Image 1 (spheres, rainbow, N blue to C red):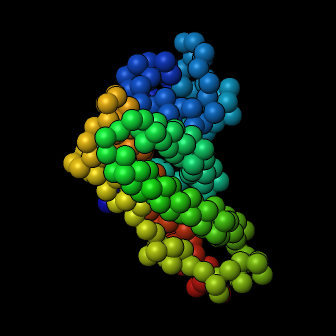
Image 2 (image 1 turned 135 degrees about the vertical axis):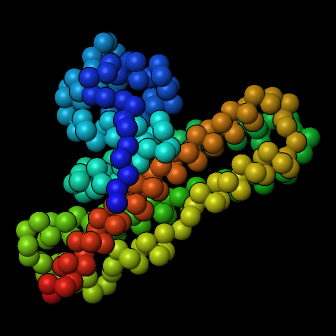
Length: 248
């Protein structure tokens, strides 16, 4: 049985009031391509101006604001195009914005006159390893998982399996991805732990605190991203793939 959830944010609310209530949602709003300067417009009005699915946007706002809010049934009702478009924008946000910002802050600490430079250089290497792992994770999803998901939904909706999908089904199953879906959040936790427990603070401890703040925000963001993949996208594709394989 599906759990009933109560939304905190509703489409008639002013988007500015949403930001005042939770400024961390600025990241999410920006990810949808919404620019500041929308005045007193409601969520629905801003979404209409930016050609955004209002219902999906509100669900995402509520998910990131309240970790206990996660209406799987509502989310699975959205098309794969809507879900994957959002996931791809999140990938771009991580790779093109968040990770470079954290890298520049860590490099600033490494380059300063630290008493324990080898230790700081080690954390920079640890971060680079994590970034490479993240890039590979994103590449695999963008090049393999997402195109496969589109093919599955298209065939399911049309009621026919293309030759392209037949070949893909012989090579790949979304269940394979689910089993191999590595938990990259674990490495992020290790990175935070090393900084908190073992590294001496640099002379400018504000930079170190800013780095930790960004890492914690990234961790929370990625947890919600992973929930969207593992609890919405993957089960949705598994159901359709199973039906298509039965028909074949």
